[in-house]
Image (cartoon, rainbow, N blue to C red; front, side, top):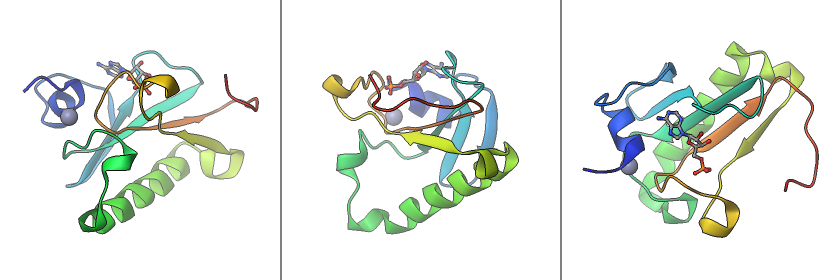
Length: 113
Ligand code: AMP
Ligand code: ZN
């Protein structure tokens, strides 16, 4: 198994874990782009958001619930957060295990680069 985020999910490589349940895990990004920069991933390997299917409805609910819980824990629920999932190379995806960047703790610009 070569996927970096699968290895983080099954704890064969360490990460700074901030949230976990049976379906998802979240950890601090190794190269933070904001004061809060957390990556949320499903434990199951899915390449990107386009690969979810109708069997993943429960998992998508878990992901939404985890975003809400992490936002509360980090005060991003009141101050705002940006949730980003880069999909494919043009969008800047470098790890091909779907992940949601949860960014906050500063004001953000739009449009993104
Ligand atoms: P993306 O470019 O959207 O695919 O995002 C991949 C993210 O993974 C980047 O923000 C990296 O900084 C982050 N990253 C890469 N390796 C690790 C690691 N071992 N632990 C935590 N974050 C990582
Ligand atoms: Zn994976």
